[in-house]
Image (cartoon, rainbow, N blue to C red; front, side):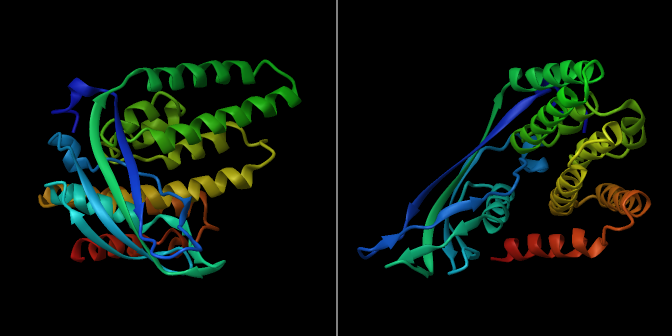
Length: 281
């Protein structure tokens, strides 16, 4: 996977979403987004440079959960349509209201997949993190805490906004410690392992005053990373073997480093079932 796409070493995949609300009467307040999941451009689509837009119709219940998704207009590629459905399935809404009471609603949503060259975002992130790492060892306790929070903020922004799945770990390897990078570099090709950013932060700053917050970020990243790995198409036996190998290594990592984390909480099986359910709709 170091192969076909090296000419776009760092790219920004822009996922833009627009919506059209189904509202038929006065006194209707449309649903609004409470939480959007992390999105990564499908690996197969990146390798083949596939682009397009998928228009979907979302059925949202009174709890703000997306219950049904229909494709109104396909992007022309099954892999992009499936990724759009999986993304929308995990959006959490503040439900629509009619006369102040929650009601079921429908919404049109468009997910656009575009690949454009974009270097400065990554360059800035790497430069800023490098400077913060240098500063944090030279200041007193109060200033150190401020810098640590800034580092964590930068990590969060990177995880949420850098959508290039094929090159995610190439950036990651320049941020985490060489020791951690060495442990994973033979296994992480093509599957983003964002949880290592938070693992590195915990190892680097064990005195951070809100370490439980970082651990929760690590758990959430584990869930996202595992879901992405499981949803990656693996027709060739070699790819299937690589997927099983990296998932097993993640399980061992959790057991060895965070035995208090229940594997069911990470929900390995539910993630893959959710993917196949979305493809069957």
